[in-house]
Length: 188
Image (cartoon, rainbow, N blue to C red; front, side):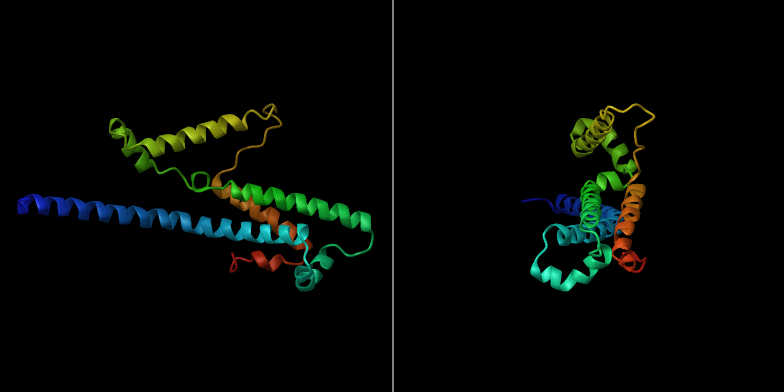
């Protein structure tokens, strides 16, 4: 049987860990939720429009035909086709770019967690943070292998900048469909 003092000590440790865990979750949620909501909304809009353009069904044409005709008026079939192909290509790029925006790329690094991990490196606590750091380093290295010199290389955008750039590009696509209000501040 465990002495009451040891049981009380263990209960105190457990309660302390749970309190810190909840505080950490609350802080992380506060940082991540707005980005996740925005990226999810942008990705959903882009993917839905891409689906409408690439997998036309009778139901989609019936319910969204007016949107398609607004963007691609049936005047010259060859120009409609090339314009449609350009919009499809842009939407595919956007869906891919938005899919790459995971929490590690969008949110700033957790300096406190990384400092803690460095302090306790010999205890094996830092495995996840080490893997994240290695992944960021590998992605940076791989992005430099594009075969372009420094003059032609694109600058890597921060998470917030990348989200804003995707939103700007999607707004341009939506404007062609007369759907600018979809990305209004009160909707995203």
